[in-house]
Image (tube, rainbow, N blue to C red; front, side, top):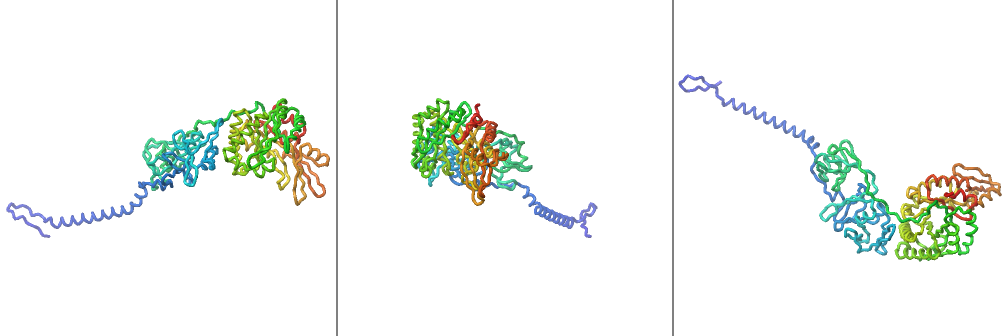
Length: 587
């Protein structure tokens, strides 16, 4: 190895040259640095996916795209469920709902007449009309029309009239993605507090786009929750997902708008109703049957319903077979008289009169009602009994509006309003028992025709099971104190030849006589709660399911068990006198 000597004369030690040593050390450091950089690069390459996986995205969702609205469109959330089909409209900061949506979700009481460009809303004591110039309590138009004539109803107007509605709307001019949260007949909600600032995302996962930011202390409604993520509703109108650990434990809050449905001043009896229909057709001469029919009841009936008013033209004309003497006689016997208004007893009315079209116009409804009120004054009725049958579903709204407005007129005069209905099924729900239960004094379920003249097989007119079905289904919509169940004073004689089945209606008395005189075998049938009669005659099987004191007693037990307002019977003249003491629910 080479050494460098110090040329000094002081005798100092020679030292090693540092030039090559430093070079080697620098090389080592360089290679170490390169190795370190390689390790860092490799670590970054390996760790980058892991870092990206666990780093929340800060990307924000386009709100117009998320809510699927643009311009003045408003996304509707009903009880926190987003409507995917229907859009409301915004006008000057107010939300306007399509009238069809209001009918489906809130109430059918907002009656819209496109022919008259008029909205009508019936309260228990008055009928309010609104036209295109009408304003709500906040100074907004009550309704607006789109370019195609579609009607949109003010949300604030809806909430002020249907008092069990609350809402939050985000529809001001500067709100890009307009939306409204509407709450109606909702159950309890779960509420939680945000424990620390966090984000609300479109889906569960930190890579889901952000909808909005939530701050510590904010209250949210929790719709559902897992260990890691919760779906919540924020106070600023967003539904999305946040991490469950960012929320406090939930507390249950009741949805209670503190509102009671306004009701009319009802004109109800202070005792149970015991009523029957008196069939009057063709002429007023049929009223002469009154004395004999009433005598048969032995004083147990307190309401009689003569079928006096029968629509007979497309223009809403009607026959009226009323008699003031009849009414005075009934009153002297302690009975109320409810005049029946029907759409089927006159053949011309049944074929030509359209409940949907005629009552769609306010002028027709009010003219018809005015005539009824004049008749009540002339003849001294105590009330009316509506019996509109075979209504198609599209007649439901017009019929509803008619009986609402009739209710107001009746109760202004202290008249009782009762309305007849079939046993409730989905196919006849356009009669709307819920509305009847509010506006009518009594809702009558005609608990018969389980099997009728159109039936393809023989069967009971009113089995005990059918009776119970009618009562229990009606009670889902009508309070017991307003519900009357009607029983049949008739049965059907069925004749089954093997190739065809036909039947004939027979009154209770006539049916019992027929079974006895023709030697029919009679046995009690537990399933129907009736006596069953049968015989064979020349290859034809004759059958009857008989109504009598025993079968009617079972039906009366059901009515009393459910606390119904009374009983009715179709029709006077078909029944033996022996049943009336049984039917007297006041006895």
